[in-house]
Length: 343
Image (cartoon, rainbow, N blue to C red; front, side, top):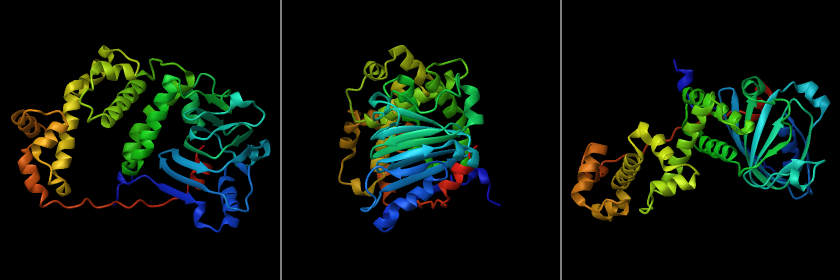
């Protein structure tokens, strides 16, 4: 019997582009009607592009949505009919969203957080936009918030450190959701909700400090992944980039052997990936090592063997017998059903 905790996360994809243009907005309006009444802000004759790519992580939903300009409403009568009671945290990565009765200063800018309280009426307008959305049952998030009933249609600046940290965390979670199983999702969500509460409350408390610290560490690791070939990278430069002291940076990396040890191990793993790739056989081992800061061949070989368990030459030889990893299929489920059930 398959263990449900080890199965891949439910995944759902929706795309109006597979339909004739004259049917596209009707399909979107019917789909999003599970929570909102929608009206196109432009003409519908030429079609309406909307896509949803979503995952169900336990009792929460996480998805990337892109859609053309439209108006959203959630009336009091709709609140009474569907009984949905959740928060929707929307990070607008492109385009904007704002309350229709507000001025320009009430609309999001790229990177900002827009909060929907599904238990309260709502009237908003969006431009052509792309946003990351986290749907959380009120009963899970409200107890962690200072003012749980005063968040409807609130815009929170993406320049605020905790808001930016939550955005980076959710983006990373979305990118890796396809590789997570249900047990891993259940393990990561409590920390995610603590981080969300810290961001919305604009404060770090004793109860959520651990989640904030872990998310900061993860954000720095993602930054190092991007800058891994930058051989001028320094602890002071990394610390300055994240607005922390060098001592704080060192404390964050103590559990993994220290900042320099972590950076060295990551570079060795990348060297292993290149040496294991038969298409990179034209590159010499020395050139690969130097590209990642290992200028002495014997030091590189010793460090590589300690990290990987074999020499660089052995890795390259074994690559000739390599096999591609199987691609895991993800069973499709319907994100509209998730929205109606998250409460």
